[in-house]
Image 1 (cartoon, rainbow, N blue to C red):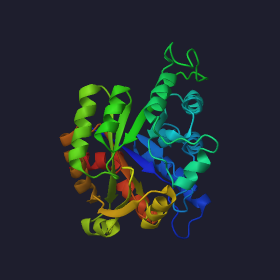
Image 2: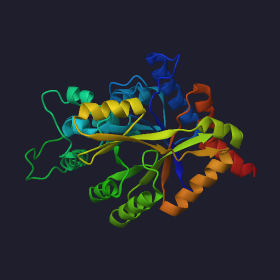
Image 3: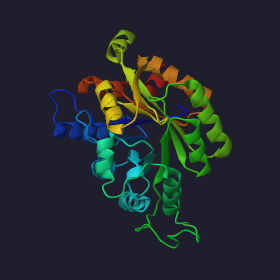
Image 4: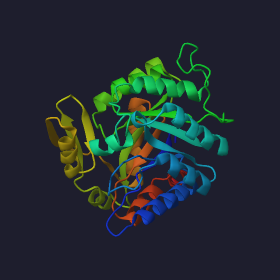
Length: 335
């Protein structure tokens, strides 16, 4: 294949699965992903949630690095509005010093939770997220040890300085996010599982490639694979993308209608919750690969990060195995 595949895992907590089991399944999936030939494995950040267990990606990344040997492991992503860029850089420099060449630092712009958890995370230092661009720019300077002489923290270093820098990615779903990433020379991961509008994907891809042609352009997609198309269709079901639109103009994606309603109420703004059809790529491995091939050709995608929201753990594992690079390569060799 002319593109690579990775996995995004949110450590889902499904019925009958404890938080302990959910995180152990993440470890097991990372180990299997390594054997199956996936390029990277990312974990997410969600707060005050009873549906996903991944609230601290930097801690989980550390554990996963210790439990694997070769696969790249990273955050998908750290929600920078809550944290000091300096501390984030230190955390990932420690990880990169322990495991040089295997660490990804994915940065997200969203809060990763409802307003209540945002207030708790920012206890004593409430931040609206309006300084996100400045935070990301400072983080990038810290990673590359080139903080401007005119900066208030000139000459500071995020130690230890690792032998290989972590790869930095901005996660987003808009042309503006792609533009920001390109201007700061940060690779970009377009969240197509949040924004399925291919016109916006095209704008993001073109903007990013124009400004930063040597940068890496990744697309995260919802993918469900099974032995037959009918089985894959049944697994895909009638899933929806849930969004809350706030009067201030902000739009956020939530996992359930209940969470979206709660977010709207906690925001203190007028709001509207809407459901959109999820554009799921489903089918046999051959069908899914053909769809990914088309996206790769149309939008110049270097790599796909696969998000597979199947409640049944065994079926979810099987989906990743069927679409794994080693399985697909065998199919190509035998065809």
